[in-house]
Image 1 (spheres, rainbow, N blue to C red):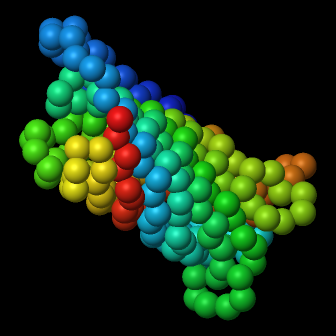
Image 2: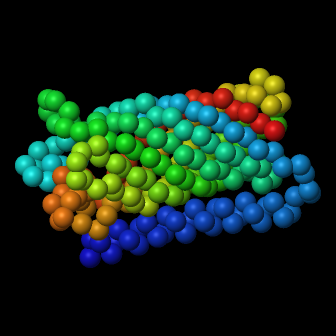
Image 3: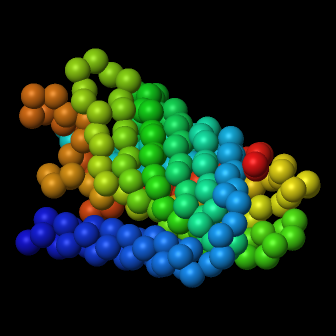
Length: 214
């Protein structure tokens, strides 16, 4: 029953996000034709930590906060909405929550697509949006498999344009990754290293980037 609830929750979130993107497309059809604007944003940020449970001992583990790097591509749909593609990568570490030496390094990757609503037409442009895609957690330990799951995200921030084609982007972003059916990860031949704490893995990031528009 728990697994069924989790699957229905993830499906409902996905349907809502897809409906949001469809609405942007309909709005685009109602707008007069305009030159397509593309924004490339190389960015850097910091991801918060999250907790796991050790599958062997039952002890609490933490995935440390880490610096992240990535690229965002935004394409105008209407003057006030954009389609967004996002890729980020971070190198974190798994360690005992109570303190002690690190157990292994973990690479965290997000690949998402979604939409933004952008306000204002001048140099200060607040925005918020939603995305969906995949999260991948890759342990740097012999014999352990990577874990890839469906995830959704929300984002809010502001774009500060210094000129028409260059600006700064400041944002806060949250990711919710739906965990696998058995709640375990980093497995090898049926033996797993960690258990997720809950049906979703939550992570919050703060990012800054340079917007290049053309």
